[in-house]
Image 1 (cartoon, rainbow, N blue to C red):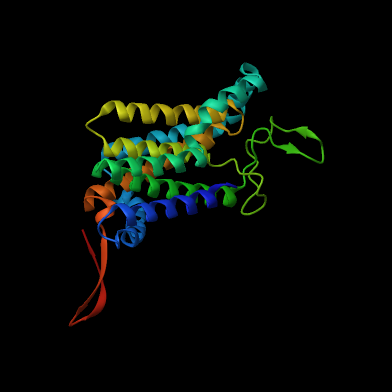
Image 2: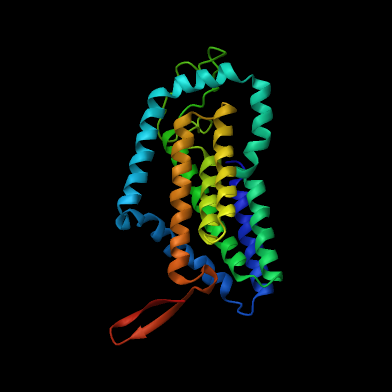
Length: 279
């Protein structure tokens, strides 16, 4: 969370500058930023348009989360006995990267730049959509963290100077109680799956891209449990949240064609003034 504000500001600046330099319409960066409102509404309104397949997935996630909450301690104990701290740290060094802000930010900027230079509109649109998914995931996960303040598996009670891993899975301190207790939800899992679902959604014709993206996101999520940074339920909810966000952003793009084509213009009629969204 310490790096999120720097990451968001950097990527917004980078995309805005690149858009101004590499596109003919200088109003595109502003139009793109304004599209966040409508994209966010699309993400939030998804349940209103769910079909039976969507509700089946939702039910599966809810069931998995319930079981994880019940067995969080048992899962942690299994991981703790299976992996030494050294092994956990080594694994996390390789699995965490896909969910790190300082990996995601340059990656989005790089893919957008490549798309602009290569005149590849799909790659450019995917990059801009990935930026939206990243920011939505970052803000949402950070908000949930500070509202729940769940203690992490290896969080230490300073007054007792010992780890309370055996009893902390159900320690929820409540809103703004501690900015150190930020276990729920996993930000890495949320960001990783938000990006994976966005990338996969833009390339449905290339299955290997989706498989690779979701594999990396899954590895990142499992790595957070193995590294003992999160309870299993933190990761499951984070992954589902990220998928939900990325899918919503993709649906918004499918509806309008692409995010870079969004135009919000003032209009005046006999009934008054307002704005119109054009694409």
